[in-house]
Length: 83
Image 1: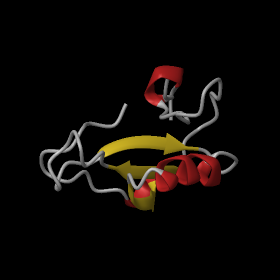
Image 2: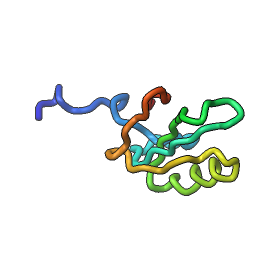
Image 3: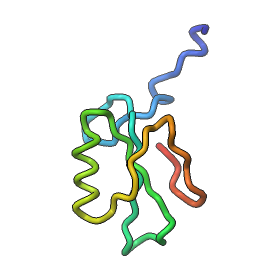
Image 4: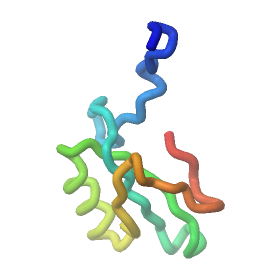
């Protein structure tokens, strides 16, 4: 790998928790049923430290649909793109 092959900071997905810049490990797929069609999936990314907190935040509201390792995530058709 040459230095030009190294990922830049903007290429590495980061955690969606406020103020966290750690590398994302998890995808939290969610949907707000009052705003989105049932098949729509919005995504938050989470590091190991924030996965549970973000999952609980979405879960309490009934929005959380799935939690998947980032390297196993397959973006459903018609869903929001990962940031």
